[in-house]
Length: 384
Ligand code: FES
Ligand SMILES: [Fe+2]
Image 1 (cartoon, rainbow, N blue to C red):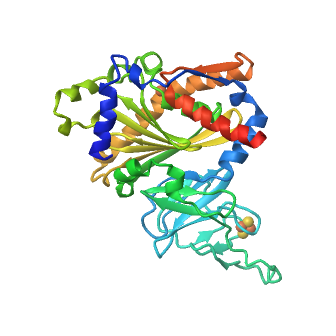
Image 2 (image 1 turned 90 degrees about the horizontal axis):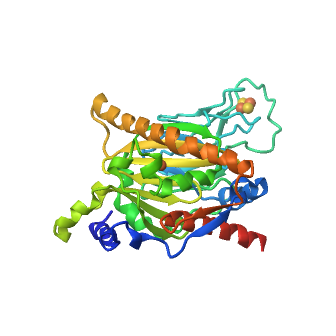
Image 3 (image 1 turned 135 degrees about the vertical axis):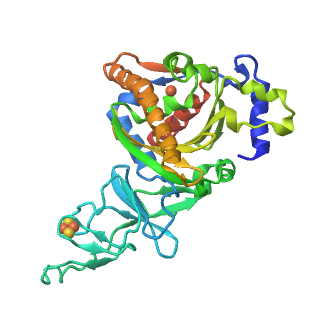
């Protein structure tokens, strides 16, 4: 993040009062509980937000060399992105053209792919997606009209971020997707990072509860009283909208220490958990010494799959250095799994049972107000 931007954001904190009241939204808001529980609403969200995409598909890190690939489901569709010999990325539907078997494990990544080998009847494909052979089929498919190449999907990368479109063939304009966040995100040099590890898990809550719990800091002092609370501010976050995306910066408790220095020396990075929410499915978190990404995949109105990855600014030189980042990932998944997501699952159960008709978002939770406003607008426009 450019120095002027860090100073600009810190100035907002300096001018915001003892409890960061100056960072509050203009007004609180409410949202219908059915936004989290109604299957018809969920289907609309999938149709309007997830199916057309573009969807975040992780960082370019780990996809540097020809033959490097990453497979994931996007709107349920199995996709695989592969680095080509000419340096470009291609995205394919990860389904064999014979009878649909996945060519690589649906949530996996790897290096040095020379060909796709179908595990079912051994059809093989070039990394470019062309069918190479149907071994030992004795001419049984010679009359098939289709060339049976892998089906392609639009993919684009910029600033070290990869996006795919699960359905449709319209090209992806990454700047348009980022909606103004490209200046900040570009300055992080994400294309220089190294992938350390990814983990995929499933949860029993609506996908939007993921964004809710990550984007505000109000819950830290209570829910995370034994983990994060001593070191983090719980009053408010720095919030900024980028189209339907948003920036939410969680602050360290000691952020005001920086104000004792001359402004030219100010730095936000040691004091901020800088989170870019790439709606509908991505979160890029810039921590001082590493980057985390989250990819959210709605499975049902009350079921969500998350893939969490950690990236290091340089390839870890030793096992010990690598372990440091793996430990960070362990800690992140422990706190979110045992504290945030455990509670989100209870909230979902209660909402499913009709416990509340509406939820309230405070002025001290500005990202939630923006996020739900954006989603509700998309839904309202489609039904008008
Ligand atoms: S499904 Fe792939 S070869 Fe039959
Ligand atoms: Fe939390």
